[in-house]
Image 1 (cartoon, helix red, strand yellow):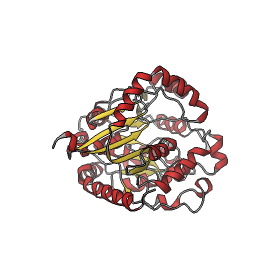
Image 2: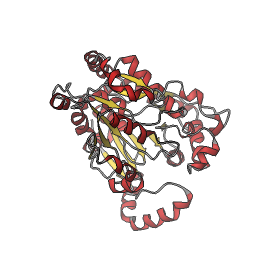
Image 3: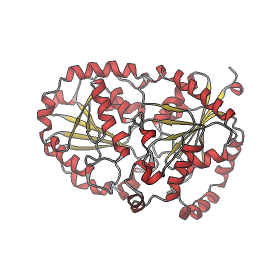
Length: 409
């Protein structure tokens, strides 16, 4: 098919993430033209993301927290980057999207996408539902989240032409009314997705484990480590794992900030672990290399909060779910991550624990049927291979287009 005749799928994000790049890659194979329109690019060169899109249009912004206070700084920076912006603007003018998928956070970006591309069907993808992260407005404001972000979230739920979500299937029926407000009306078609596996990223079960060489247990965590202002969960859970004399390997995902920026903002707090021989902090890796690299460890873990969960933690889902399956690793999560734990136990690929159980982790691991979990992983990652689920997504696209035609905003 000639390129000019391809249906364009445009993904609008702050910076491209692997989760959506998987969808983009498969849609590109099916003769769609996939385009990433992003505010910035991650500091790490990501070949997997490069391959997913026919074209990446980046505004090359420096990272600014998107709020009205920072608008003057953003404007000044934009002047310095005027050539890049003009080039991006001309590329955007040529777009003729079949479907637009806009991902939060921030919700302000998604709301602007809906307004600026109002002629086209726009699907809202709340990667993490912002209003579910906090108990109430007061706790939200304490962490510096502006009210307009929540208003934008509500606007997107009520005015988008379609909604994608990856958390628990009923999560949109139980939004946090203390923050997002009551009587929210979602009229558009809804599609539930999981972080699906991809054949290209699935590695054979690695039998050449590090533990075969040193007779010690090796855990791995791959993902973001954030500054948890509501508790010390990351620190305390890492501390307890190390006390058990279990090796913990961390592959940090820095996203739109550099390693140096992360260390300045958050990483300095982890300096105390560096002298511990069981603590291993590795360089960030591209998704394509990551699954092969971490397959040599014994278990994957979900580090994070273990106390009373927010709705976001209880019902949320992360891309680590598929990454750990692709790497062939049984996963251990806190039971406060209810949906993640439920899926692990449903498929027999992981277990849930409480924080207190970390202190007895070695005995818990001895009771697991590791070989059975590995067989379950091999079965599950084929069942959740993304290409098996793309036809449903394409049907959803047609529902969204029909909705847009019948209920124009």
